[in-house]
Length: 418
Ligand code: NAD
Image (tube, rainbow, N blue to C red):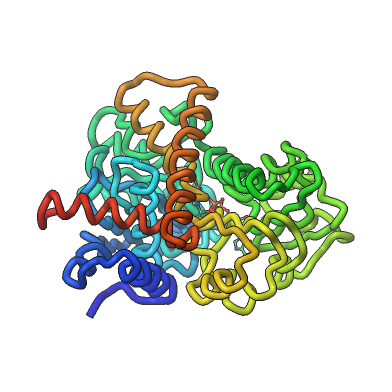
């Protein structure tokens, strides 16, 4: 019996079982590696603007403490449940281990549709959630960050609430804060920039020239918006984009700067253009060189995988490709997947830089952040490529083999506690 259920958790579990079989992890070590160390569920009451009271369910899952404190984002989403949070915490663990960061994975969130809240209600909910979490988090136990539905402002409210209770500013309790509140330059852009850095490494290897290449990006938030911007900046033709309100496709290329300007004003892509409007259901299967799912989990299933028309699948989102789709992609063999735990790791890498800078109160210039980010991404990418070549694994299995293997080694040396 486990409290962790649902399709996203089942997917993380199936990936783990597959890699555990591939790298011969003994059966009696598997539950300790897979199941989270701790999970907390809280009720977060707030006063609504109309005077009524509403209660929202919040969660925090800390996967393991073997390699350091836990670290992970906070998701505000209407469909969130503890199984999804646990899956995201597990993926964070493999990601941090793969990239050599001194963290275990964590994830948290609140089941709420953020656009349904006024700004005052969002602030009340953010502060209440952090207040409920104070006994369970800390700069050396569990450090929060943004994820879907949360942003720099929410992180500033989290940090302020935690600091007010401690009686002094504790900027290192969250990352992804505004620079004015102890955040680091380059954090907001880090995930999207990391995605594009890795896409360029693969494109280079495949002999794809950026000037003639095309890309489709699903999701136009923090990650997808920056990824589209960085691709366009390098001369890639961004032919398709979508968010939860609209999808656009134009084989001649969309004006990414105009899309960004539209989203700055209207917050979503809806209403950008009536000519380029596209069917969101078929956007992912349009022809392109680079496909970047940067929104939700499980958007590429087996059926969609068989119809993909790209050469590079850059998983900017967490868990966009199901295990059934992985089987199809392995059989096809014509698409290079940059797996999520590598592809979107730029976010947690620069979050780590932010935490280090906050602890030292010594802040770096943006070029140093970018240089160090690329160095860590390149190291992880090279290790994955070497493992693919040595063991004949897919890129996902190679990345998981490294991440899971490092956590297993840490547990073996330390004993049962963490
Ligand atoms: P965000 O809230 O800033 O943006 C999410 C985007 O996805 C929005 O544009 C939203 O409209 C879009 N979207 C939602 N449902 C959609 C649908 N059905 N079809 C198309 N688009 C849809 O979130 P984000 O921070 O950009 O995160 C996106 C993904 O990247 C998530 O999987 C997240 O876990 C992952 N990720 C984020 C970070 C980070 O630093 N923010 C780091 C690593 C991974």
